[in-house]
Image (cartoon, rainbow, N blue to C red):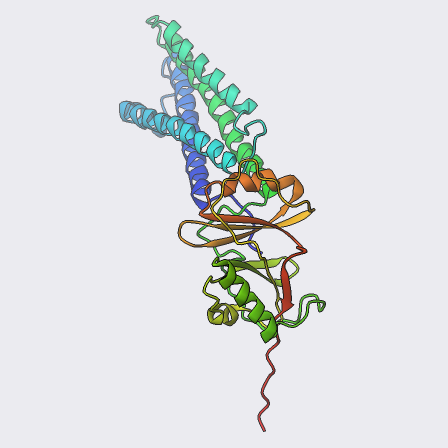
Length: 333
């Protein structure tokens, strides 16, 4: 079964934010060391001289400071956008707990940046080069502490997001194969051995039900303990394509209540411990989600944006269940 993870776009955005914060931290370390080296150079009267790399930083100081400023702006705005996207993503899975972005490291970062800004505003150039370099070093040091806190915070927030998405059990990576769209064509044994064979009488009843309701019916295919996918029985009762997709030996369940584009508000599911959630997006892709009773609100939150949805108790007392016949190998004579 496909692992439950946040969207790939969010993972890439997280990596970009961490790279930007790490770059800002690296620049901060270089500037901090440069200021201390220059301060030491001034205090000893230039007796020991400057190392080549410090001399290079001094020579190209304006360009280096401008580049550092650009990196600062990039990571600050990038973190703000990532933080909003993280909150929006968790809202889509019905997570109403304290936002993971409310983290002590973010508070520490804000305080450090504000303190560094106040140091710059209140400190006046004394004319003493050593004293001015001391102020610059302190400011860069405070800013560096804040950036380090933020880097730790982004990583810890990411871990909390991964945990909450896993707990919700909602597939958010629509660009990856999921149980509902992953073809399984291997010859499989019957999953339980308890369901009757899917004979012609079974399929005739399925076709009559679909044509009678004039609605598509949801067919759940089970090919292993955790391997599920959805197929749709068309309203016209033509089962040719559906039957060709089924894996030999799979257990199938046809639910008699069609998925629909109904409101989720005030919806009360049939009492059960486990449900199978049906979600169809605007492109027609089907998502199968196993839902515990505790996670029903999270599923309904996601169903609000679906083209069609349904939540079926599993097993269902009204569904039609059968086992797909296994293919009989033809022996060469």
